[in-house]
Every structure is written in structure tokens, then in C-alpha cells.
Length: 351
Image 1 (cartoon, helix red, strand yellow):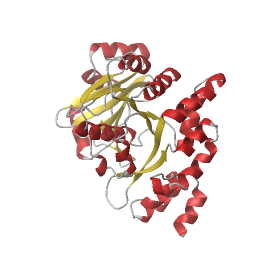
Image 2: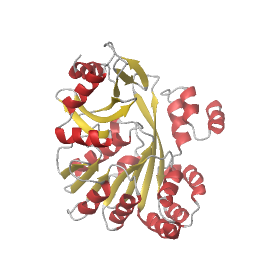
Image 3: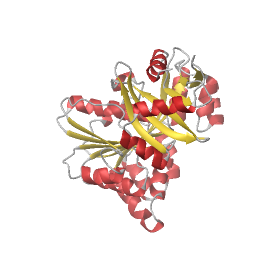
Image 4: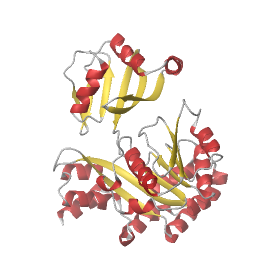
């Protein structure tokens, strides 16, 4: 059983993820459903051989030390993979996320039109949030590519690991990978500010130092794009504020109110009209009213502001879900299962 054969079969089935776990056949996720592949049960030596094939000696040493490793892997004619190697029940497990070779254009992603307009921002902080596998990386990559096709600027990405491989078009693009090109996100971001960037992509604001540097970069005239594992705009603001000690929270609310430009919160759904996935996206734009709400710690008012400013391009998650349902793209069951307020959405769908 060869790794290349498994990956080719997964590619032909348009799988989003591949899992190699001892005692199981190779598994793939197709349109959110886990499916066994037509191969024998994996053994510990076969999984280790797959890991050794994908990694270099330095990566293997790091895995032996930490028993967890994130890295990227590319196969000619198949694409790139974001890979996590880990230990489970004393044996190696591999989780591989397939990444498309070509960055899809924004207009092909079924995203709100306002997201395209955000790529014209000269500065500030734009956050794309959602659960793992919600399409955050694809949205950000499409935004970067739109700017790459339009501007003559310097873009630096800090990723864990590098997912979409960009080719510099009009922009000069540098991509730095955690562990290979920088020790931490915060270190990479600190030094990126001395590398004359116009646009910075931070793979994830996962700690206080990285978050503080990202906000400072946005405050000093850069356009900063990043992600958080939050499900809506109000939770995103609270998550950032809660990273700080209580004595600094008023200050960070003020800074965030000045620098934040938009929060896009994504949820992916299986389509019922054709094979594939489609996103529902909550959009919060930082109007003067939203900035005051952030500064004055009234984030509970954000959902109401979003609902009353649809003409500006804002949309709540539930309204985005309802639109997908009424357009015949998703099922009623899936719509209600992912809703922020299921009972309210159920009444809306029945109207």
C-alpha cells in the first residue's frame, strides 16, 4: 500500500481530508462524511513509513521530541496537504487536509459581495473566524490573491503550515512557515514589521503577544488579515479582550475599536443541489456605532446592529443560513442545526 495511491484515490473522490490510523483502513472525508477507503487495515509500520516519506530528518526529530507535528506536503499533479502527525494509543496517527493548488477567485466561493470590497482597504484589521474546516484559509487566500492581481505591494504571510502557495503577480509575496522559517507567530510578526510590508496575513491570533502585535501593526498603517476560532462577531471581540489582563482591557477595547475593520464568521454546509460545500457568513463591518459598542463594552448589542444594517452589507449568521435555505442550497435540518437561534430561524423558514 503506497501513500501516493491513497492520495490519488482521495483526490479522485474529491476528499477534503485523509486519515491514516493504525488498525483502520485509510479514511477520507467527502462532503463532511467520513468514508473508509478500499485498502487493507493500516499497521504501525505502514503509518510510520508514510510519515517518514513526507518529512525530513529535522521534522522527524521534532516529532520524536514533542509527539505532535504540523507541516505541509506537496505531491505533483495532486496538490498540497496540511498534515498533522500525532500519537494515539501509542502509535502514530496522520490527519491530512487537502489544499487546492490554485487559489479560487472570490467570486467563485459563494461569499457575500462585501468581502471583495474589503480587499480595497488600505489599513486596519480584518478577521475571518469559524470552526476548524469552515473555509477560513480559502477565504483569506482568495482575498490575498485578489490584492495580488490588483496592487503593487509587499505581502508577507505567516502560516502554520503554508497552505496555498502564492505566485507573486503584481505584488511581491513572501510566505513564512512556523517551525521552518520562524519559531513562533509572535516572533515572525515582530520581524515582519521591519521587512517593509504593506499587507500581513497572520495564520492565527492564538496568544496574547501575537494578538497585541497584530493590532499594533494594524494601528501603524498596515492591512492585517488573521483568524480566530470563534463563531460570531460579538464572541470574537470578547475573545480578544479576554486575552488581556483586566487592567488592560479598557485600553485594548479602545485600540480594537480604532483598528478593527470587519469580522467575517463562516460556517460550511453540505449542498443539496449538487456535490460540494457552501459557506454561510456573518458579516460585521466596523461602523462608528460598532466602534463605540466595542469601546464601551456593549458587545451584546452587536447582533442587533448587524440586523439593522443589512443595507450596508452586514448580515447575521442566521439570515445568511436562511438565504442559503430559500435558494435551495442546504437542507432545513442542517440550517437549524447550525443556527445561532434555532427557534427564531425555524419561524423564519416557515414564514
